[in-house]
Length: 483
Image 1 (cartoon, rainbow, N blue to C red):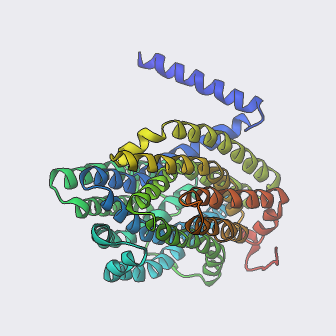
Image 2 (tube, one colour):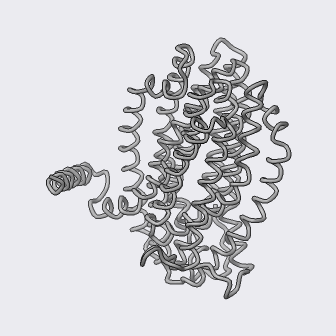
Image 3 (cartoon, rainbow, N blue to C red):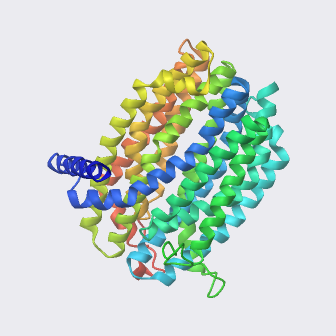
């Protein structure tokens, strides 16, 4: 029976692959390569994004809407810090993949060391600030009463785990840069399962409420870090999974040229991600003016979109890795073909996934809240989030291709335009006009649609190929002025 099921699935997969090839979406051989690298990252993305989502659902069931709103406030700060790690990890995978593709493993390993040092310098003050100023920070964005208490507790408990999360992001991207997405997938998926078990037991079993949810999340993140540290040191997990660019105490730890390259590539990514995180705070403040139920609904919508964004984790890293490796080998036309195919594939997947979420918006909302009015408000945000997920997914593959080339400045500017020229003003218009909450719906869509269009233009221009030439292994310390 099992063998028949496998054969059936294999036939279905082959039929889908042939259909996508005939439709001109993606070449069959590139689909196999892309999915081989992408699907573990997709699972990893779901595992990572599920942590906050599980906390939100369990707290909504056990405590109520006010606590969900409080977690929404805390998540904004957590996400802001995490975005810093994602930006740094993005620069890491760009340089690791190009050096690894150029057969410079020692240099690729040194990139990882630089990244870990920078990460430690960045995360230490963030953790201290969150722990010491949690209550003031939550109150700053509209937290009051029960929401303030819940948000403060969650932020204090989870903040120390950010140190592990920074390491986890760098480790995961390092593995992806050398073509191994399965090792971090297993570690992250195991952490997600541990989080579900711990959070459910601590909240519903032990009755620890928000504190229990935060503790379960913090412990599971730390556990993932300890597991990944084993492989990153060059040791295997039962014969597999050892990083081919291991980090050890021997050898140099500092290289001024590589550090400059890492900072030059990472800075726009970090700035872009931080800007994406910062814009959440005025949006939460605007939402709080409509009541805690709208804050909770907005956060649920954002969590749903984050889960849908997990597909982009896979497609984006596949684009970064294949484009970076091909550019590192000097094969610009093949790099372009890979990028174009992954972008087209992501568009098809996101249209289908978002359509399914829209159809199930009300049941999804009911997982997080139970009051009929709250369910209705939340379902509307779920729909808006699902619509915005389509340009989010396409943009993820585009920026992944650009990131593989080291072209990170343009995506940063495109994100700024989408967030601060379109999304935030639209939300503010809703605050002072009859548009009301509709301004927040529009903001969710605009913040992803605008950058997707601008980055798509950049990809078609092929200017990113010129940018990549200054980061390839044979570039040395040469500098090239590229727009």
